[in-house]
Image 1 (cartoon, helix red, strand yellow):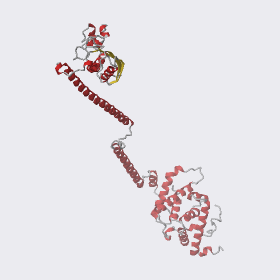
Image 2: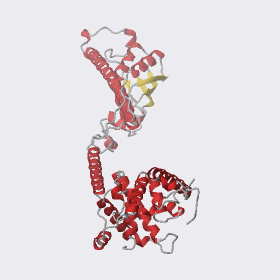
Image 3: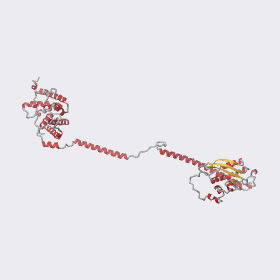
Image 4: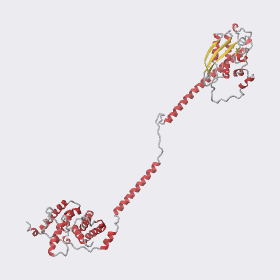
Length: 305
Length: 162
């Protein structure tokens, strides 16, 4: 044992501290101590309670998690809100709307065109009736007819108009070159009521190449030209009334895809007045609708009756 | 275990300051059981002696009991000493017991370990997990307090010191 003044070893040097003697210990019960020492320590109650609390917390957490999952899966599908004013954020919808708008504009244009054509048809019907009335009046007995101008009717038959010779027809006395030459085109066949044997191929009952129902012909053919000219032929024939000139009036006709005549040019005429009358009459002709329209030259031959 | 039982009992008795025979017996048994349970951890080749290791465990058991129960020693000087003490020593022994029981707990533990169990300063420092300087300081204050207490009850013991 070391002597240390710092710890005050000398302070109690004179005192016999062993006079404080403790009572002897009670004899230790060895087996009990050994059993207790070898027995696993029981889990303190506090720790058990802690486990109970931890278990309860974990159970509640699991329950809450399950509830959250169930509630989350039951949520309705997200609602897509489109901005007001007809605008939409979807590019496809916008493209569809634009397409529908374009189609609507196209349909409106077509409707306007149909209306315009209906008006033209009505006007044409009116004119047809008017000219038919005129023709009927001309076919009446002479005492019921209006007096004709003597300088314009040099022919022995003052009643009938000067016959207009259709270049595609052999009727009317003066046969066309095509007819006289015995050619067999569609127009000639139509005008000859398919009398020639070569016209069989142009008959309506002759099998024709089928055309799609809704597809317009690409351009004007002879039949459509003859039909179109036929609608104004009686008007053209009346041009003879105001002119004494006879001969061939050749006009170049330009037809729009809609079937309306857009331009008429007099290429040759024995008389300017007669040519203008013919051009004005042809201007009113209506042809079938085509994809591209077309232009053609058409001769009218004015001969003496 | 029988060999160290009196040592453990003496330490518990002096540190518990006679809080009751049953309580002291419980602490002694707890200490011995703890020694038995942990005897495998003691390293005979290590620096600590077995007696010091057992006293360390006993000190921890007593301090833990004090922290749990919060008990403060109740002075029963007549019961603090061995009834078989010689009549001439009873008065002084009781005075010493009373003086020690009045010490602060940390001072009392250091005092008991040093004066009654012969642990040196470094061993006390390890048992209490403090440094040696603190041990010396606590011992100095404890001795001074005991001397002061005894100087009142037995002034003749210190008459020749100065």
